[in-house]
Length: 444
Image 1 (cartoon, rainbow, N blue to C red):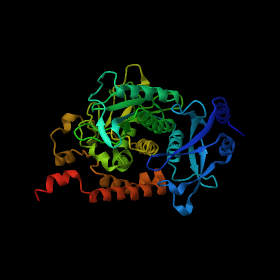
Image 2 (spheres, helix red, strand yellow):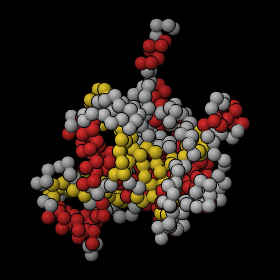
Image 3 (cartoon, rainbow, N blue to C red):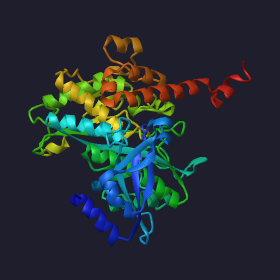
Image 4 (cartoon, rainbow, N blue to C red):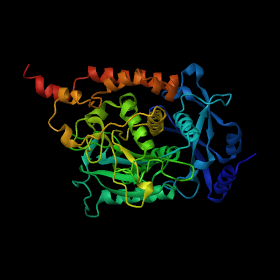
C-alpha cells in the first residue's frame, strides 16, 4: 500500500511532465552517486527497490558481492530546477539494502539514521546548521579566482555575485531554505549558510547544496571547488557545524537562562563528549591530505581541542545567545571542512555528544586566545591542552583505535576508511612536491 508521500511523487511526476527520476545515494567517502529511472518503474521501486551494481561504488562491496538495492525515500523528492521544464528530471535519496532488503552496513545514510534513532530514544533531536565555504575558479585546470574580494565585501555586480544569487534561488526552488550568504575572506571564496534543520534532512541538503553550487558554476562556464585548501597564502574552506539538541516539545535542551553562557548541564556534557572524542572522529571531519593544510595552520581554523567563547582557534565555540531567543543557544564545531561526508560526520558528532551526556562528562574551563598565545607545545601539554591532529596519518591512527567510531560506523565502514585513508596518506608521503624541488634540488 502506497504512502501519502509516494502518492504525491507519482502525481507530481504526471503533473510536472517528469520523464526521469534520479536515485541518489552517497558512497562512504561522501561522493554523490546516482542512476536514472523511468516513471513506470517507481511503484515497483517503492515496494521492492531497484537493483544496481554496488561493486562499482567505493566502500560498498567487492565484485563477488555486488548486487544491492536502492529503495527511494519519497519524502525527499524534488524536481531538478537546472534541467528543462519539458521532459523534466526529478530526484530522490535512497536507502541502500542487500538483495533480501536487509539494511546494507556500508550505507552512510543508514549510519546517521541509526544514530538519530538512538538520540530519539534518549528524548532528543539533533538540529544542525552548517556554514559551507567554497571557491570559484576560472576552470578545473585553472585555479584563478574570479575576484579579489574579502570578508563581507560588497563587490560590483560581477560574475561571482550572479553565481551566488543563482545558486540560492536554485536551492530555494528545491525546498532548501538559505539563512544568508556572503563573500568570505579569501579571493573568490564564498559562503552560503543553510537554515538549521534535523540532522538527516541537513545531510541530504548538504549533498544537494554541493551539487547545486557546481551545476550553477558550470552553467556560467566556471568551476566551483570544495577543496579545503586550494590556494596558498589565503584562508581555506571550512564547514563549521552549529548544533543543538531539542526535545520533542520543541524546547532547546542546550538552553539554561540562569547560566552565564546560557548553557544547560546537557549542553556541557555534550560539549565534553565532543572534546574527548574529537581526535577519534577527526578523520571524518577532515578526511583528505589537503584538509591538514588548513587545520592548525590558519588563524581562524582550530589549533586546540578546547572550547571558547571568542577564541576561533578553539575546536568548539559558543556563539552569543540572542536575548529572548532560546532556539539560538547552540555550539559551533569549527574543525570540519566541506570534503567531509555529512552523514558520517553528523553521526559521529552526535555519538560523541550523547556519550558525554550518558557518562556525565565534565566540561573543562574555556580557553581563550590569551591563554595559549605564545605557548610552546610543552607548555600547552602541561596545561592539559591537546593540539588538533596535524596530519592525515595521525588522524587515521586515532580513528583506527577508536572503539566508539567502530560502534557508530560498523566494522564495514570503519575498516574501509582505515584502509583507504592510510593508502592515501602513504601515497602522499611518497610523492615529491614542487616545493621540495625548488628548495632542495639545486642546493643539495
